[in-house]
Amino acid sequence: MVVAEGFGEVIVAESAGTHGYHVGEPPDPRTVAAAAARGVDLRALRARRVARDDFHSFDLILAMDRGHLEHLRAIQPEGARAELKLFLDFHPIDRESAAPKDVPDPYYGGPEGFEAVLDLVEITSRALLTIINTRYR
Image (tube, rainbow, N blue to C red):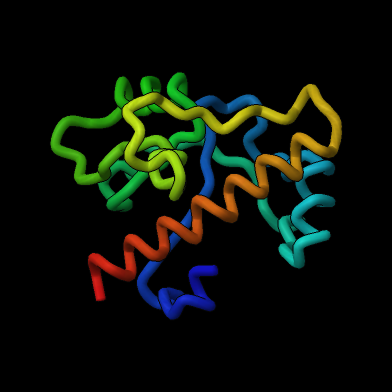
Protein backbone atom coordinates (compact mmCIF):
# COMPACT_ATOMS: atom_id res chain seq x y z
CA MET A 1 0.00 0.00 0.00
CA VAL A 2 2.80 2.40 0.89
CA VAL A 3 4.48 1.93 -2.49
CA ALA A 4 1.18 2.03 -4.42
CA GLU A 5 0.30 5.36 -2.78
CA GLY A 6 3.67 6.85 -3.74
CA PHE A 7 5.19 6.85 -0.26
CA GLY A 8 7.77 4.13 -0.89
CA GLU A 9 10.65 6.58 -0.62
CA VAL A 10 9.43 8.37 2.52
CA ILE A 11 7.70 5.85 4.79
CA VAL A 12 9.61 3.19 6.67
CA ALA A 13 7.34 0.69 8.39
CA GLU A 14 8.51 -2.07 10.69
CA SER A 15 6.92 -4.52 13.08
CA ALA A 16 8.20 -5.23 16.57
CA GLY A 17 6.90 -6.79 19.74
CA THR A 18 6.90 -5.38 23.23
CA HIS A 19 8.32 -8.61 24.65
CA GLY A 20 11.01 -10.94 23.36
CA TYR A 21 9.12 -14.24 23.39
CA HIS A 22 9.39 -14.87 19.65
CA VAL A 23 12.49 -12.92 18.60
CA GLY A 24 13.93 -14.37 15.39
CA GLU A 25 10.85 -16.46 14.61
CA PRO A 26 8.69 -16.10 11.47
CA PRO A 27 5.04 -15.03 11.70
CA ASP A 28 2.41 -17.61 12.66
CA PRO A 29 1.82 -19.93 9.66
CA ARG A 30 -1.87 -18.97 9.69
CA THR A 31 -0.93 -15.31 9.31
CA VAL A 32 1.45 -16.16 6.48
CA ALA A 33 -1.27 -18.17 4.69
CA ALA A 34 -3.97 -15.50 5.13
CA ALA A 35 -1.62 -12.78 3.88
CA ALA A 36 -0.46 -14.92 0.93
CA ALA A 37 -4.09 -15.35 -0.13
CA ARG A 38 -4.18 -11.54 -0.41
CA GLY A 39 -0.96 -11.38 -2.39
CA VAL A 40 1.31 -10.39 0.51
CA ASP A 41 4.41 -12.49 1.19
CA LEU A 42 5.41 -12.46 4.88
CA ARG A 43 7.76 -15.44 4.79
CA ALA A 44 10.93 -13.35 5.13
CA LEU A 45 9.75 -11.52 8.26
CA ARG A 46 11.29 -12.34 11.62
CA ALA A 47 10.12 -11.10 15.00
CA ARG A 48 12.13 -8.50 16.85
CA ARG A 49 11.62 -6.62 20.07
CA VAL A 50 11.01 -2.87 20.25
CA ALA A 51 14.36 -1.17 20.81
CA ARG A 52 15.15 2.06 22.62
CA ASP A 53 16.36 3.56 19.33
CA ASP A 54 12.92 2.97 17.75
CA PHE A 55 11.52 5.79 19.87
CA HIS A 56 14.08 8.15 18.36
CA SER A 57 14.05 6.76 14.81
CA PHE A 58 10.30 6.62 14.13
CA ASP A 59 7.76 9.43 14.13
CA LEU A 60 4.83 7.17 14.98
CA ILE A 61 4.67 3.89 16.86
CA LEU A 62 1.35 2.10 16.75
CA ALA A 63 0.21 -0.43 19.34
CA MET A 64 -2.35 -3.09 18.49
CA ASP A 65 -3.96 -2.99 21.93
CA ARG A 66 -4.11 -0.91 25.11
CA GLY A 67 -1.82 -3.23 27.08
CA HIS A 68 0.96 -2.88 24.53
CA LEU A 69 0.39 0.88 24.34
CA GLU A 70 0.83 1.19 28.10
CA HIS A 71 4.00 -0.91 27.94
CA LEU A 72 5.37 1.30 25.16
CA ARG A 73 4.60 4.42 27.18
CA ALA A 74 6.42 2.93 30.16
CA ILE A 75 9.60 2.19 28.19
CA GLN A 76 9.63 5.30 25.96
CA PRO A 77 12.77 7.31 26.73
CA GLU A 78 12.24 10.90 27.82
CA GLY A 79 12.64 13.30 24.92
CA ALA A 80 12.01 10.65 22.26
CA ARG A 81 10.25 11.95 19.17
CA ALA A 82 7.91 9.02 18.49
CA GLU A 83 4.22 9.62 18.98
CA LEU A 84 2.50 6.57 20.50
CA LYS A 85 -1.04 5.67 19.42
CA LEU A 86 -3.37 2.75 19.06
CA PHE A 87 -3.45 1.39 15.51
CA LEU A 88 -7.26 1.40 15.44
CA ASP A 89 -7.31 5.10 16.35
CA PHE A 90 -6.98 5.46 12.58
CA HIS A 91 -9.86 3.11 11.65
CA PRO A 92 -12.20 5.17 9.42
CA ILE A 93 -15.42 4.26 11.21
CA ASP A 94 -14.25 4.56 14.80
CA ARG A 95 -11.57 7.24 14.46
CA GLU A 96 -13.71 9.88 16.21
CA SER A 97 -14.83 7.58 19.02
CA ALA A 98 -13.33 8.14 22.44
CA ALA A 99 -13.57 4.43 23.25
CA PRO A 100 -10.25 2.54 23.25
CA LYS A 101 -9.91 0.02 20.45
CA ASP A 102 -7.89 -3.18 20.48
CA VAL A 103 -7.05 -5.39 17.52
CA PRO A 104 -8.18 -8.88 18.56
CA ASP A 105 -5.53 -11.57 18.97
CA PRO A 106 -6.47 -14.41 16.61
CA TYR A 107 -3.88 -16.85 17.97
CA TYR A 108 -6.23 -19.17 19.87
CA GLY A 109 -8.99 -19.20 17.24
CA GLY A 110 -9.42 -20.50 13.74
CA PRO A 111 -8.41 -19.06 10.35
CA GLU A 112 -11.39 -16.70 10.31
CA GLY A 113 -9.78 -14.71 13.13
CA PHE A 114 -6.68 -14.12 11.04
CA GLU A 115 -8.85 -13.00 8.11
CA ALA A 116 -10.75 -10.59 10.36
CA VAL A 117 -7.51 -9.10 11.69
CA LEU A 118 -6.14 -8.68 8.16
CA ASP A 119 -9.39 -6.93 7.19
CA LEU A 120 -8.92 -4.49 10.08
CA VAL A 121 -5.27 -3.95 9.18
CA GLU A 122 -6.05 -3.28 5.50
CA ILE A 123 -8.94 -0.89 6.19
CA THR A 124 -7.06 0.99 8.89
CA SER A 125 -3.84 1.15 6.86
CA ARG A 126 -5.69 2.68 3.91
CA ALA A 127 -7.27 5.27 6.22
CA LEU A 128 -3.89 6.07 7.80
CA LEU A 129 -2.29 6.54 4.38
CA THR A 130 -5.14 8.88 3.41
CA ILE A 131 -4.49 10.94 6.56
CA ILE A 132 -0.76 11.02 5.84
CA ASN A 133 -1.43 12.02 2.24
CA THR A 134 -3.75 14.83 3.35
CA ARG A 135 -1.37 16.19 5.98
CA TYR A 136 1.96 15.86 4.24
CA ARG A 137 1.42 16.40 0.54
